[in-house]
Image 1 (cartoon, each protein chain N blue to C red):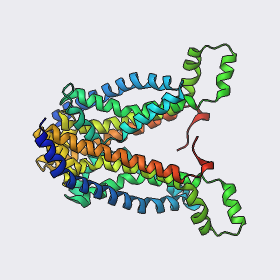
Image 2 (cartoon, rainbow over the protein chains, first blue to last red):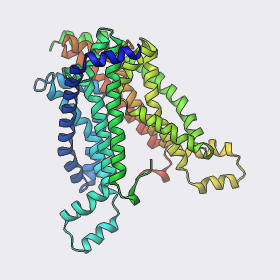
Image 3 (cartoon, helix red, strand yellow):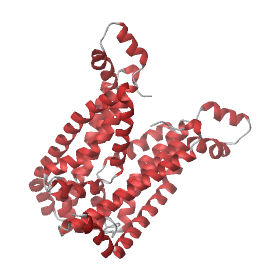
Image 4 (tube, rainbow over the protein chains, first blue to last red):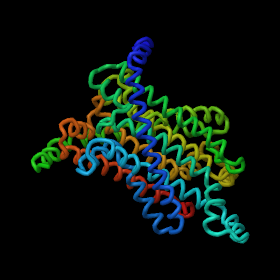
Length: 218
Length: 214
């Protein structure tokens, strides 16, 4: 495959690429949005009970182990979900459980106890401590979890093409079936570029939002 | 759902698929360990620290590439079959092991190393008898991450003709046979969870009690 194959594929199929990208991003946005809405509160709640935290984290870990293709395949056999967006969304939200809950829990738990006590001594209520102390100070770890979730969701969403999503994974699927190498490689390169791009951008944001004294060294 | 199909999938198709899948996982992880542990040791030596940062960044970038894209890119470069799949999967399983090897070795307290050198141990002996044993739990946790990843992406390897449980799942999806899906996907999930638990157990057994995490 040469560069001209690649560019001619891009030119000829720009409309399809746009359509697939749009579908891809809609799915990723929905999945990440729902995941944040569910798992961040759950993670915050778990900081109250160590017993439940251990149980839920073990469950999240186990779910995270399940191969993505297996997860999609199992959900498809449940009549309520079937082929299509519902199964894809549920699978992605379940995968996001582990990084999001874990990072929110770790982030909040890692806050220095003295700081919390000082805040309480200043007369702050539990709610204000949560919003003004725990979340901002836990942000570096929470954001790192968010970054992993976004990059991971983008990649796994591509596999949802096998259960009927029409997204960027479809180039790979069809390219493989028709032994159309330019199509397959273009699809793979676009997805990789998006994933690496998102990872890099969120990495930069991560550095910006974190107070200097709190930056985690990697 | 028909019992007949289920039985066929479980007893006729699954054993071979499971065998191929295990083969892919074992070979990939063995190769990944053989490459990344020495690489991690090499990069954790103070002399090569700068080089280590560059390598880690490159591996980080590789890690961000979705598994399905790696599989798709492996086909035109490496061809069809089990070997190309193993090479592709191996590349992505390097990062967690290299990273954890470096973290584990750098995490060994300098007091311990000084004590060892005070006892007259050479750098080599310190590495083999002090640093590596202390770092093993962390290295194992990297191997665990890599193993779960390879089991997971191994299901996609069937797309480029590597066989394995992915064959059952893909067959089930294209014929829409839920029995195939349940058998293939279920075995894949069980395999990943089983390996994760097993390596986790090893990690805990091998960690000296005084070093146990929380």
